[in-house]
Image (tube, rainbow, N blue to C red):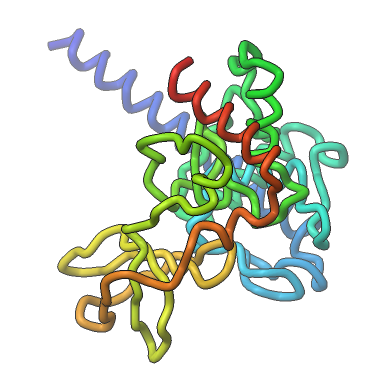
Length: 255
């Protein structure tokens, strides 16, 4: 009994220590966010919309947040912070934004640069494809806006079951899961995530990045099929770049 009691006490202490560390991270993250991001002409406090888009409850995943905070979004007002914030502060602000999106943040082994170390075994062509997959220069037109691979990106869409043969096939990739949703008097292409008894979760694909919605059952109407097509979301890449991305996809599928 004493041994069981000691084990339980150790577990409780470890849990308390983890909760304390997480709380400290969020407190520091909010402080860094308020002085670096919520500046009146950028994001609002607690991720509310201001001059820049809303950050709270957007459905962003940890990898996307890490990459965007570290690298910024070229062509927009979002700057990279990897070179201006010390690593602890960078982790803290990523943890804070992750918390605004319902994620219990834990720093990854790759840190807030969003690029792993174990992928160095990739061929040069596959490495180029990996970089293009999450290329910040493309803004929200990059593949990682809707797809996740090797911990990079947002899993809006389900994984590609079969890698297309070439760039042309990738452009016209069938999207049978995309349907038409009618919600709040708006018609939109959408991906259904869950259809529960208490809530319906779906992504609105009208613009990039897709917007995650939570609807009450009975407030949304579905129609099969949609005019949405994959080619409109990969137009930021030329055929040679898509070929490199396909090489990366094949390498990831068969390491």
